[in-house]
Image (cartoon, rainbow, N blue to C red; front, side):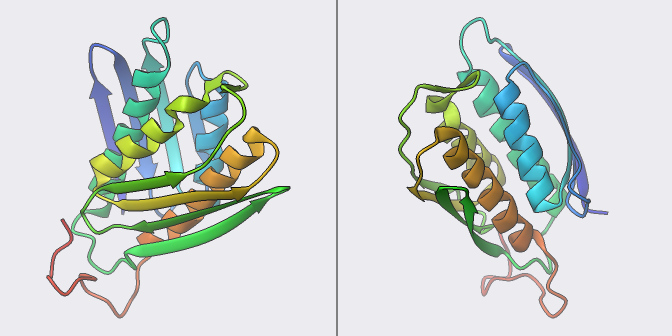
Length: 194
């Protein structure tokens, strides 16, 4: 079974994440940032991952540590659950329309971390979520997993819809990359993905 549990504890955060790559899209996220909960549950649903998370952080300071460390812990969970990555498709791509918004996510589980994010937002906050920490979440994720992730928002009016389109596209693209390709071994001419 491709699953993992990560407990990340620092002076700033306490995060526990349980992940099943071959789930049904069941997300149970508990944090004090409602919009983050909504986005992670959306990601789980569209990626068909089962994700349970308890997230506590120093929100009296701001949201940066909590959101970034959540990305790190989620990336660690995926890295652990994927193991040696034998048989995975490795790469995935999805363009997701969310009403008037359109976002793309492309991911390669190469072992080499890189993030390119092209998205503009009009507002400082969406609900209780500070928009400026969104990129920190994804940077933490790719660094911990060792993934190459490109995100682009093509257009949209609502910042909520743009961010939701990102998480839906991200979930779908990552689902594809994590899927088992029956004919494949390690999907690299090097013979390893690190």
